[in-house]
Image (cartoon, rainbow, N blue to C red; front, side, top):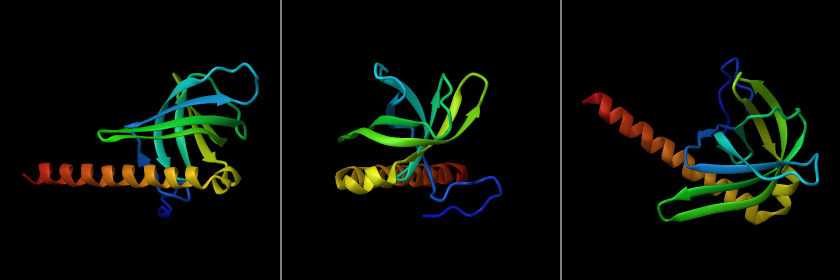
Length: 139
């Protein structure tokens, strides 16, 4: 699903708020790098935004573990590869715009299916939240 050009929007695919999505990352620059929990900003089946304490250079390769927690269970994706597409300094943290490695996703049909399912669930959740918000404001 494409996003209309709003002047500032550079993404090709619409992203959804990811309040229930948890992530951890590991950079590929050091062999002994530990997994680091990160805050998730938004998500699509093609990429996501995360917030980190330390800067990572654009075009760096990172590995992510993702878990979407739901009342009836969870969807987990381990060790998905991503590229840092852009980085923004927000003074107390860094926002990283990530693109999932398309070759990795295409080779792993299970990963692709899970990414699409997470995006679909987050989209439905956002739509429900918007409908409830509209109903409350109408009263």
